[in-house]
Image 1 (cartoon, rainbow, N blue to C red):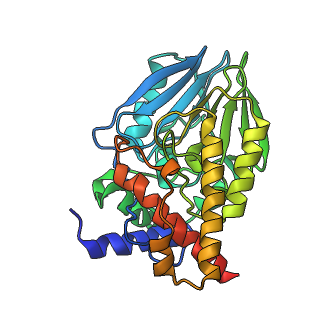
Image 2 (cartoon, rainbow, N blue to C red; image 1 turned 180 degrees about the vertical axis):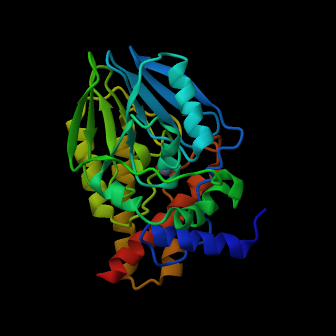
Length: 323
Ligand SMILES: [Zn+2]
């Protein structure tokens, strides 16, 4: 167990990084993302499209697509060792060059493996995602220690590797025989959330926009309206069969209604609490998770998923206070 003060300081640092001034509420635990012992399982999603599913959710998932000209990888994971695991998975399927790597957001767990990819790999990120990655590496390592339980060894070899290609709302990549679409539907969990969509197999990788089957959103930015708008646009725009979340269990499109319903219900409940002049503490007690959003007991790292609700309540409460 880590000392409590360390955890609180570390969460505060992490959240500062993510744009939150207030300490998180009781019940919230940071996502346990130490990849030690985690294996990425290669799961074919359709012809030439593969999910890399983490053996210990919510440690990150990833994926890759193979075209006639080369390969595109989705997310580089949290350190070089995991990045190499991704490269090995690609090499077990094809010896074609890895032409592109897409970072779905700017957090360490999606980008710290960038540096192990070959120099010829183009790293693509949404503009805001690139900005998120710009602080000095040592600072980013310090801020993200809380995600790996304070294990300094997790980041010891990490080197900085920034994206060399950016986009704003949309980018299309032709890999030869297969096309990949990159969409930025707006802010959600971060300002630069990117959806990687492969029309040929109707699959989307969502980064942190969706935390997988059985989950609720992680309102890290605290902009509920933006999150709802982003999910609505995403749901409308793409024809989907399978969703590979950045973290957690693959989901189907029912997750959109669950997330949007959750966010709207929560907004209303917090608004009512504010109208009754409840304090933050009273609101956290009053606004409990409704039954239909209950987090399944068997969800790996149940504590993390369950702790998202008080976190979200506080985020909305503070969002309303600031206005
Ligand atoms: Zn993440």
